[in-house]
Amino acid sequence: MKKTRKGLVLAAFFAAAVLANGCQKESGKEVPASPAESTASVNAETQTETEKAGETESQSDTRIFTDSAGREVTLPKEINKIAPSGPLAQIVLYTFCPDKLSGLASDFSEGAKQYIDEKYWGLPKFGQFYGKNANLNMEALIAESPDVIIDIGEAKKTVKQDMDALQEQLNMPVIFIEADLDTMSSAYEKLGELTGETDQAKKLADYCNNLMKKAETAKEQIAEKKSVYYASGDDGLHTNAEGSIHARVIEQIGAENAAKVEKVSSGGGSEVSFEQLLLWQPDIIIADSDALYQTITTDKVWAELNAVKEGKVYEIPSVPYSFMSSPPSVNRMIGIQWLGNLVYPQLYNVDIKQEVKNFYELFYHVSLDDAQLEKILR
Image 1 (cartoon, rainbow, N blue to C red):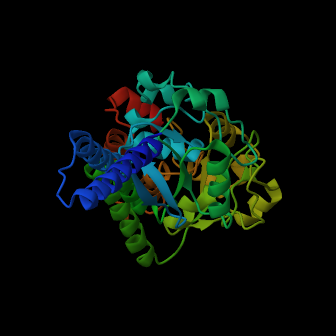
Image 2 (cartoon, one colour):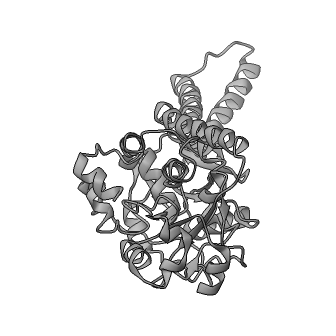
């Protein structure tokens, strides 16, 4: 509409100019421009400047952000509402900017709620955006209209295509931020760049970076590796095998994963036999639930293992998230401190209770009392 009006004004202006020029030739005298001509000229210039100002204002409301997949995505200048694409994104975003969460991928568990501020419990649930467990609640997403959807985790080979397809399907900006144990610090830095909350990003990034450096230094000093068996499932005969993302903490502290079998990424991990366990004779056993811990430490069959005889069986802390995985995200950072202190106490010579308090305050925004701490580290 603006362009049409502008065209009409200019046409009128030129017509008047031609007419005036003709009159000048006939009379041989100069004829001043009429008030109408002057007004048309001013209006045309004013409209042009207004349109330019509008374009500049529109451009300043957005910016281009380059994500970890190298994709250039147009985003609002200010990010106030973020939708996590799934559980991995949810935990990282909660640790970094909980007040910017416009919804959740999944509800917090009852155990987790003891350590999560209740104002976040009732956020809209969007579900998981893509993958085999995709269950997106489109109505809830549209109702909240987040500024951006963020996917966080390990980079798949198809991550660029996946993000492009999701963005096109939802007609909302979607970005990917790579985050595993090695890149967790840079992930927080990227989130700081995205949101402008660089101070918080630096605190979390520095923690992750310093801890990973400490773990690498410890690995170089290990003379003899100890083996760890990660027991899961109802009977303890399911495990996260060597090379599994869910067992990465074992390898990160410089220990050996006792389960040298084919890794399985779903269905509860790899299944093993008790005969294999007897052959492996792990130095340490970690159990992923209290029920399983009780079984391993009291059952006569399990008592045949040296680790059980020597009291080297430990329950993995699991609230609000497991120290080992579930999900395999930033929660594993405190798992490095915890497991390192159990397996190589001379190299991870820390006050683990104080370390847990520090981690929960920095990442989960909660100050633990002694009762909570004892429950976590039972």
